[in-house]
Image (cartoon, rainbow, N blue to C red; front, side, top):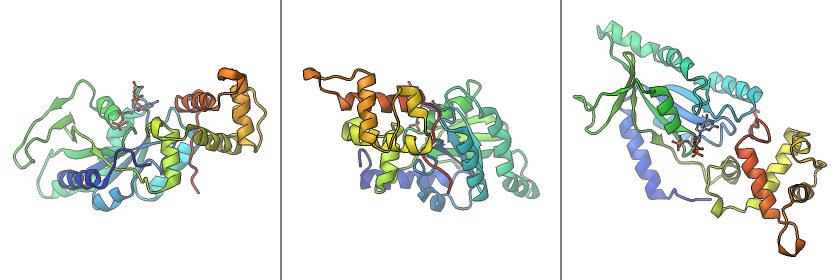
Length: 280
Ligand code: G4P
């Protein structure tokens, strides 16, 4: 499953992260609400200990809202602040600033006691590839942002985006590496489209997705594809191929085409709002 991360890449990303984390008060970790665990790398917990932590469940428009609520509760119980957002259309973005202030209240109070007033909270966005870090930074910073440039005591070259008088954001996100060694994580990342398709067995992936949808969202496949759902996932793919006229030369059914349709429609939310992981 390893498509772009190799040890060299990972070491470099980790080093940059360690350097940048020294400069900030708060880590804003972007995750994909459809796979809140598989789209994280828990190494960030070690790297970011002693920092305030905010987890954004992004792409909430594509996820099952009931499960998203459960995941927010799950993260809050573990001591993170958590907010669900749709970075693409801006839903939920407004609620973030007050949460940031709340998450950093100890630092603000500490500053106040030392006589330091109005020192902005500094934050950095992190996450694995494709979770929506850049989309979020654009939505959050908006047009009103001004880049503050280099400041004394800040590593040269770092750019800070001033969100308002209280909050500054590092303009480049920290990239975390996915947990490729876990096969199931790899499969889920592939299902949501975060791993390039060329290196995957699409048919196998679509069969796994069919089994999951039948089990967790019974009836959803029948509604979308007019098929009879059953435990027999190959039969479900076959019916999709028939109903969507996926035919190859020689009048044989084209399973790869059917798999592509299923995955594509899942990824852009046409099958419904679906989450692939459940709080245990
Ligand atoms: P990254 O920096 O973490 O790598 O992610 P990036 O912002 O590039 O976003 C990855 C993809 O996810 C983009 O789609 C982006 O539009 C989409 N995206 C980000 N946030 C949301 C969200 O809340 N909801 C939905 N539905 N999609 C979101 P893309 O296919 O690469 O580009 P495009 O479709 O926008 O052209």
